[in-house]
Image 1 (cartoon, each protein chain N blue to C red):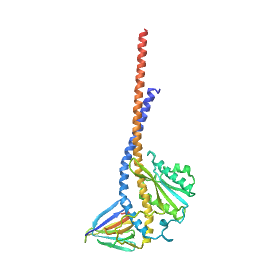
Image 2: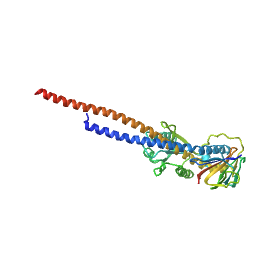
Image 3: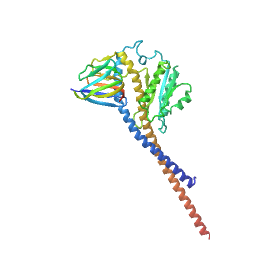
Image 4: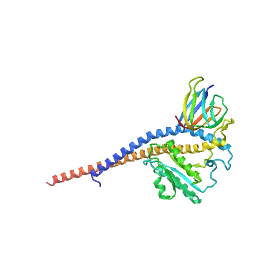
Amino acid sequence: MASLKELKGRINSVKSTQKITKAKQMVAAAKLRKAQASAEAARPYALRLASVVGSLASRVVLSDNSPRLLAGTGKDQVHLLVVANSDRGLCGAFNANIVKAAKLRARELAAEGKTVLFYLVGRKGRAPIRRDYPNAILGAFDTTQVREPGFAEAEAISAELLALYDAGKFDVAHLFFGKFKSALVQEPTEQQIVPVPTPKLAVTDGAVVTYEPDEETVLADLLPRYLRNQIFGALLENMASEQGASMTAMDNATRNAGELIKKLTIQYNRSRQAAITTELIEIIAGAEAL
Amino acid sequence: MPLLFELVTPARLVLSEHVHMVNVPGAEGEFGVLEGHAPFTTTINDGVIRVWRTAGATPEDIVVKGGFAEVSTTGLTVLAERVG
């Protein structure tokens, strides 16, 4: 049985932990609102771009000189897994789930005899992937310097990926990130980014559209932009997911701490009463013995 | 009938309003868009978009970088990676 002093110490330590988790929960809730708003604001651009790229890609007939970003390298050997994680912890299993999804895919691809390489975005995915695939990491992008990853980061990442693609380092790239469903549910999602999958065609108004200078040139110009925007979208989703996961995890932690405090307080009061009773019995017994 | 002009960046919808005319620095030369322009899509050079809110008004200049313009039956949409 722990002494009264020890119990008191434990209650206090749990209380201060609870204060921290509660503060983190409130911060996450505020950040979540902001992240959701910016994800919302990014939607018009993504929709328009997807519809233009979609209608263009459906017109252009794939040939030898069509853009490599659309047609691929003609091989399917080297797969690059781009894994986007957050930089901070305290968000439950959010990062672990993304890494798990990526590793699962890596094992599948390896079983098919493909070469698997990794490109890591964010700090939290580095250690677990490096542990299993120490020699397969092609590159990493550090987002710890910026407060929240934005378009500039997406630009830098896609520029690096395009350079690697042009250098023939990989044939197919998949992007892994946490898709934001709600504050409670974040889904690790896989998306092929290179070669660019043709977006599903949005509604066309049937009008004959002409392209200047010509369809191929416009498409070649738009494809890197489309890739960039997909990475940007993933970063935004990731940010909202991270905050959502953090909020839920911290809410649970705060509640658990509350329960623990309740239990410890009952135990503390019981031992205190026991001590008083023992003392009384001792005094009475002493008085009776006289 | 005014022209619906929308300016969109990856981060947000910058502008969406009815204007008289817009002058866009297209890849194949500058072009002006009025209501009822034939639909077409072009990449645009980094430069200045001029917006006339009403006929004869002083034009308003918006600097854009890295984008393309889409003229459809509903209006003109400029997608730019950077604005201002």
